[in-house]
Structure formats: C-alpha cells, structure tokens
Length: 554
Figure (cartoon, rainbow, N blue to C red):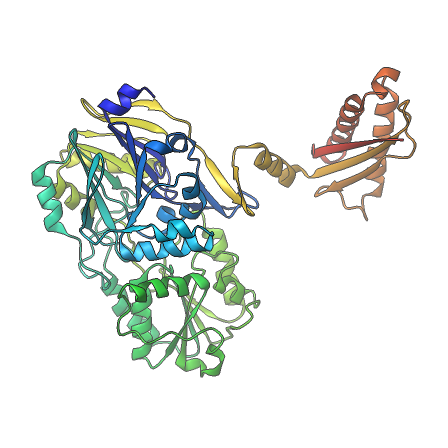
C-alpha cells in the first residue's frame, strides 16, 4: 500500500469479524497511522483438532506496528479482547478501555506474564473523550450483555465514523445505564460519514428484549422447582448473574459459582462497583453442606464446552459438585450456531441422570445482546450515516443489514469481508485493495497458522491415519531385517496383523526393485517405501495415511 494512500485517505480494514461472528479486529487508517478497535478470538471445533482458541492473523498490522497508535477495546467479551494476551506482545501499542474491561484485560495480561502491558492500560471513563493522534475519539454508552459496552466515535478531518461494537437497546438493562440516545442524536446532527455496525441479529424482526423481563421470568421459574437448581449462562453477563442471585435469594437459596470464568467476572464486577447488594457467593466446595432445596449453582458450560463445569457435572466427573434425579438445570442462554451438538450431548447426559433440563424452548430464560431489526432502524434514524458498513455477521447477516440500511435512506451500503481495504473518504466508499488475512490457532502454548503444514497434516492424520516404517539396510542397500511398520488410526495391531505383514512385504518388494544406485540413496529408498505403504493400505483399506519412513544404515 502506497504512502500516498495511507496519508491522503480515510481507510477501514477488518482483519476479523466481517463475514463471521467473533474474532473481531478492525483497523482505521489516516495520515499514515493506524488505530485498532478490538482484538478478539473465536473458538475451535471438530474442524480444528487440538485447537481451542483461534485468532486473526495480524501480519498486516504487525509489519506496520510503528504506525499503530493504539488499541481501543469496545467491551470485555472474548471475541473482542480474547486475543490481547497472545497478540498484543507482538504489537506493544497503548491499550484503551473503560474500567470493567480494563480489569478483565489486566488479569489476562498478568496471567500471560505481560506485567508491563497490564500496568500500562489507559482507562477511559464512560462517555469519555480522548485523542490518539491523528484521531479524535469519543465513547458512547450503549447496552449489551456485559457491563460497559461502548460505541467509538472516530473523528478525522475527512469525516466522522461510528464504530458501534456490540449493542442493543435495552430499556431496563439492570446493570449500567441505558443507551445514550441523546449522544447518538447529537452525533447525527453533527454528521456521520459512515457507521460500522453490528449485524448479528439483522435477520431477526422486532426487538431483542430486556434483561428486566428475564429476571421476572426466572423468578417464576425458580418457584416451580424443588431440589438443587443449576443455571448455565454466559459468565460475562453480569446482569444475568445478578438476576439469578437476587431471584435465588427471594426463594431462600444460597448461590455458588462453579467455574473459574464466573469467579473472574464476578471479581472484576465487584471491583468496579457492580453486583452491589448481592451477597457473597459460596464456593463449589461448600455447596454440598447445604440442603438441596436451599442451594443454587451458577455454572459455566452453557455452550457445551467440554472442559466446563456443567459438562463435567453431566459426565459425573466434577470433583466437588453432583446433580441427581429431581434436580433441575436451566440453560439461560441461546445456542450459538455450531454448538448444537455439544450442547445436545450435555443435555442428553443430564436427562439420563433424571435431571430436568429447561431451555429457551421451554421457558423465557434469555434475551439476546444484539440489535434486532427495529433497533437497527432506530440507530439509523438517530445517526443518519451516509455510508453503512455492516460487520459482526456472516454473509447472510451482512446482506440483510445492508438492505435494511438502504431502506433507512442510507446513501451507500458496502458489504465486505475480512481483508477488504475500504477507502471511506474522499469520494465514494469502495474497496481499493485486498490484504492477506488468515487465522492462527493456539496449539498448546504455540500459535500456528490454521492453513499451514501442521494443521494440514493433522487433518490428513485424523481422516486417513498415520504410518511409520523403519528400514534397516546395509551400505549396499540390502534389508538386514523385516521392515517394522506401525499404523495409527487405521489398523488394529491385535486384529490386523496380516495387513501389517502385507505392508512389510510391499516395502521389501519396492526396495528390491530399486537399482543398486538408488538403494544407496536414502531419499530414494524412503520414497519407494512411502509409496509402497500408501498403495498397499489404499488397496486394502481405501485410505492413504500420512507416512514417514526412517532409514537406518549399518
């Protein structure tokens, strides 16, 4: 990208979160500098064996880190802050966040051993104005399913942008203030060049609903059940945790938190003045001392995460907590697309134990944290941007959002995905380039590209197995013993001995067929043996496993 383009134009570039839900990373460029908004993760599934956490490939901005003036975090959800401890050390830019989000990020950085980063986070008050040259910034308070969600106003000489982050319009959010409609209207009067806006529920008609209504409904539900009650919800939804706690107290139940992330969120909430008047939670170690009808547990695991508290309880593997026939589990959450199978497995296990499972299909137990179409319409009526750029959605959500924006008299709606470099000004907004994008996964303690050799080999191994052959030859290339062959994930050594013998014979024949010159060449011997293994196993099992051959010369 030329220096002229970076200096003379106002640019927007998503590296994550456009064309998908999660893993948000947004870049704004002006006057040769870049501003990053959010740095999040998404989570692995059966398509990424061994990978639990996935984050954007940041090569583009890492190469320009000297021009990266700051990272602004809109709120504390993992898909907006989760990559900070892994990727921020490669950027080392200032981090700006409101107090609750700052608490969460400090904890993450300290856990990662990045004490300097944890100490240097710059806290911005709600509705705060600040400058990160050459950008003038303002936070606008919105509502969402976590404390302190903010839209970010980005002012430049070429125009004002509004990056909404995640939001909804909740008239009674219970925790924190309502959305600052007055500030949004003032912004509309001032003039907004472009709005970069949440598209998650662009296909959902009406409004998303209020946390206050969920609290009332939970009160009705808890009164109908005896025995021990467990409620699974998103740990970050402090309003929901408070609702469960207050409702439990009204039914003479003490509340335990079961799951590390719940304790971490509760600590950050109390640290920043939330959960006032909510009695201290008890630990999972103490829950067993209470009568079952006087206890309630708030658990992690609403999405069926295999290592979550609820998943271990369902498998009867939790060291401190158990549920039994007559108990109830309430899933106070929605099913995130892609998690259906994992959630279903947990719910089936609970049902087999005689535990009643209550979900949003059975009772009103959840509202979304994202704007439905009526709320999007209100936002466009207040802000009146000239350009709409939908983000935080899959292709179908972005397209629906763009059509809605056009119906709200927005002059131009631009549907893009990760890597599209958009010139927002001057002139008509358009994609002027596409930059390389990708995903990296946390593999143990290392970050690896998901389109790299390691993951390609892992996928092939998962689907086709792996074979290792060891050949012992003399200097002339004669085999000194039968080849030793091990096949993982394809043959059972106790049942498939004949098939293994066939592989060894095929290697013998392949090596014997080589010329005297090639038998003296380790690479030629390895390739002949590798092909013999794959051809033999393909003929007998229909698979071509990942194959390694070791040659030992004596």
